[in-house]
Length: 191
Image 1 (cartoon, rainbow, N blue to C red):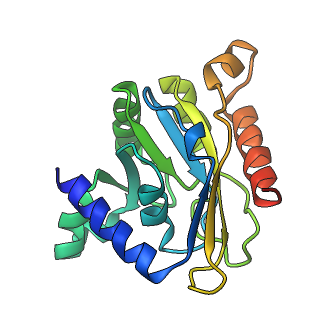
Image 2: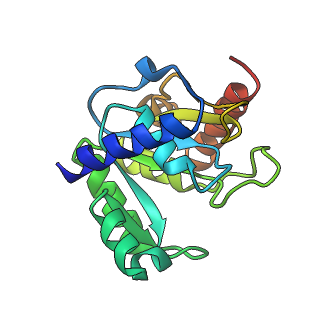
């Protein structure tokens, strides 16, 4: 319930402040494990993706944020869980596999940090690893434009990547990461 109320409040705030365009929302599976993999251009990206889809989702947040009293409380009640950046965090990986195996949706920014240039940085292999472990579909997403009222910001969702089928063809997490990269780049330069 808290998630829905908070999502509604953030949605009203974002739409009042920014010109937002969402393309391809109908491409997101309505059920089953899904990882949304997006490029990352701003600290405003996680809420933007959250208000652009109908399903509730979980996401990683850097562990330092959970130490900030009010913010830590809020994000933990918005399905965030902590991740230690810069190292392999087994607890965060285990939690995310559980979330996905329960048929839920996760949001990931596989670049690992924001891109200052707007170009997609090299992706880390975590999303591919999680998809292989949980048999989740991956929905590539691209955030384009800028967070202002005049130019506007666009979120484009691509067609789901069936990682179960790719794994059956012999793809590993590195191959899946290449597939994600190609899909996000295609979305960044199209539609």
